[in-house]
Length: 169
Image (cartoon, rainbow, N blue to C red):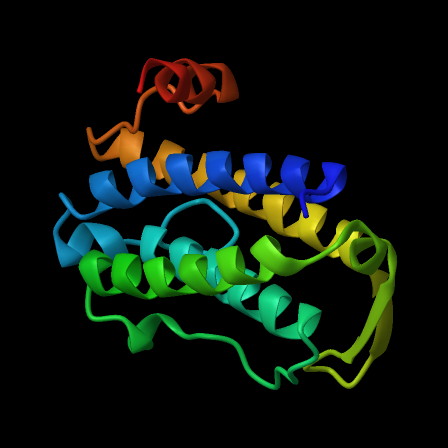
């Protein structure tokens, strides 16, 4: 059964995946030296920024389904941008499976978890998913700037362009 909130979240997640794929495709064109080059952005390199973003999405999904997360993913876990893209495709598959079955009532409910620092946190599932989307947007923007500095701009990543492309297909 379709639910309004879930459908909205799926649409926003679709956009997030669309934009991320463009960024990852451009990152795959870089050398390993470029991927790992330090930058002025908080996570350091492009690779570290991308791994941080994937790690957060991975942890958010695991926490949404009640799985404990003690440590995040690390940059050294990924040989290159292709390995990172492959891992993200699997994470996307798992998140889509979660979103396909979750009901609005569940999204309005809370989930509790313990952070890696031992803090007990309780969040509304819907807000947890919004955090995933906005966190991804922040770091995707940083990644896009780093790619642009390497002459690999991902171009326009606007939602309006995503909608136009979706309607055209």
